[in-house]
Image (cartoon, rainbow, N blue to C red; front, top):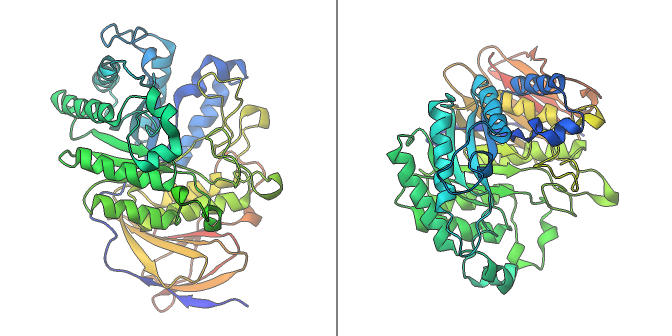
Length: 465
């Protein structure tokens, strides 16, 4: 039997911090020789650009390999006509066109124990200088020194020793090096005139919920006197029974973790979820996000699409200022033919006809609805298995609702003025579609309310547009 619930929309915004919006990891490897050798053509690249324009991402994260412009890694001998750098510029120019704010990540080389990484950091800063001045990339908003530094820089704690053991601690540089190099980058961003338009982003932690909390606290202790942004990654299954009996990896769910990070950082500091997706219950790498019972492809399933939408709404309602999905689309990553295609994207690789996954349609609805600069408002009164949030700016108001259950649910929500509705649910998704489902239809408003029936797995967006 369907239940009927009246929702309440708070008149108090979730945050006074700027809302950054939603986006994806959008690395420039798709332009490289490996992907070309596997059949990627200029027509394919134009199709990808068309889909990016339709997706309207407001944030993006891109890896940078310093050897693309400083092969010697001396921080001085800079070469700007190499393919890797030119591919990076090409992607940045596309994201400039879509007004997407970018987080550049110093990805390679990894830091080695006993090796001075300051020249590598200075080369990265020189790259930013050139991108801003010569390539006109004024949309770079963050600089991150190293992806997921949990395993790249060790710190001495009982938790770290239990998880990583002495071997890793003997081969990696210490946390103090991470702090020193980031403080150097912070000072240089200011000296070169990039701050405050571009901020240093720290933590970028990923290794288990307990380690993420430990690293977030350490990052705040190390950088509390600086105006930096903070970020983390999350690939955790939401089945909390999965973590029973393992306190070192204990996880309380996306909403609880986001709230815990927000409590650590306080109300003013920016917090972003820079990598996430839907995992299975086996396999947790970014090349293999895992499978569910019976070997199901969790990422490509309807349930996986609903799970990602649920994670977004949970994180935003609990203190995160924006989310960046791993990753935009399937491709060969960094020339790694031996690993194969990274099957983590909104659509499949060329050998599978670039077919969109269900997630493409769900995530596109979210990115289109929840725009940067909006104020977000919590919604209470949702029945079990439903999440909702409201976004509002000077131009429009949106109400986003997700029914993650296997049964229909009916709710009433306050609404004034005209209303249009976009519905995303399993039965209407096309098998093959170039662009995401985006057909808004007029919605009746009666007595200052809208009445909404949400089918199983349905994401609904109500807007004043």
